[in-house]
Length: 287
Ligand SMILES: [Zn+2]
Ligand SMILES: [Zn+2]
Image 1 (cartoon, rainbow, N blue to C red):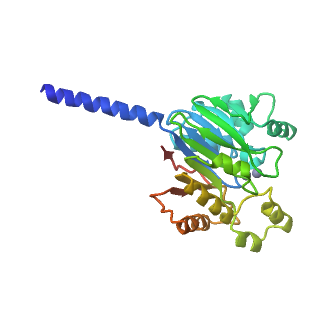
Image 2 (image 1 turned 60 degrees about the horizontal axis):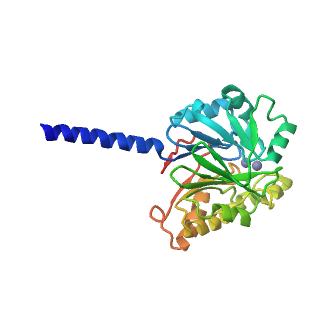
Image 3 (image 1 turned 30 degrees about the vertical axis):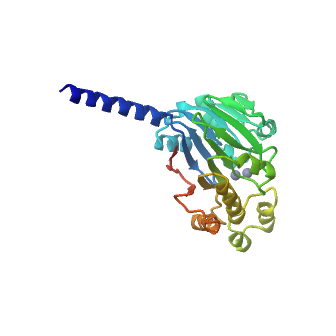
């Protein structure tokens, strides 16, 4: 009887420890991704932050509840740049829930000029040297995009793991490469399939903008970058910010996976790869 009691007690203790560990594990969810709006959650099972806020406040609140997170447990929103697909719901969400916002000085100025924020928004500049927030370290890096002062972010969570968000860039600069190197997980843009873009019905000026060094990166450029990252230790890849008009998830996936296979990298043993869906993505990466 005594030994049975002990074993029940041990089971209870180990269940408690497992639960505690699970609560502390890092979670990443690409809630919305693409030119219609971007918003990513990173944190624990209880609380965390958002990277960008490019859908309506209602859509974001509901997507978060879909992954079991309440808006009151979002402590901050880190904005990458002022384009509407990254800040659409910001003003409403922030005034309703009094969440702090962080962005570069240039992005803050531009959002002010465009009326994307108002006096009720608690917004603070991020430093390129990095900052501590809750139990994370957040470090921005510059992207090459047609905005005022856009950035991506590398986030080091309390378990020591690093997750990078690198979208909206026309080229993969040395600064981006340096930032992404050594990250465990990389959310990276795989915006367009070159053939679809070139033969599609976008006006010439828009095609030029997307193809420029301050536009977006193609599946091929993404694949090349992803291959270098996996070779240097990245194990989780999320292909993000896919164009609805000029790309298909299967094409983005095929480009990266075949490039990795060429380099003898095996999916699900050397790396895990997901394609972020445009809508209400309930994918939870837990580590
Ligand atoms: Zn943009
Ligand atoms: Zn964008």
